[in-house]
Picture 1 (cartoon, helix red, strand yellow):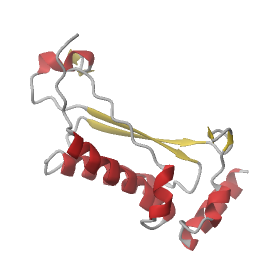
Picture 2 (picture 1 turned 90 degrees about the horizontal axis):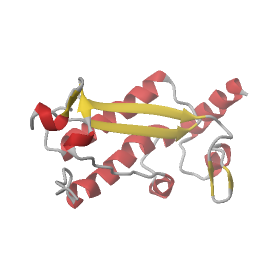
Picture 3 (picture 1 turned 180 degrees about the horizontal axis):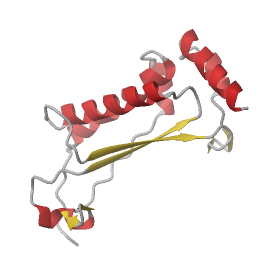
Length: 155
């Protein structure tokens, strides 16, 4: 087994668990709603530098300055217009830069934003929908209306 170097210590992961959750939660529901936090999960997966490549070169061969990170965001179908997705992506990159002690994100930090179609997300033994969550009190009325309108257009 190879010796493993941990890029993000437990304190940085604690910070990122909170800030990455907020990066998606606030634009989705329209406010920092503590009750909504349980609906968000963050996974940290670190790979050895000889298990990643950028530009056709292993990071192990590219030197210590090569800084690669990939964040994959998967959300339930809702009102995810381009400006809202951009806000989430910018908030995620800013949270990563802050946690890593950088003034700005690395150009090799990539964020993908995927919307899971209504009826295609399951948990707790069944299929989930965002529609019942709109009455939970965590969404601002403005965001709840935007979600209802967006889903009505796609129905």
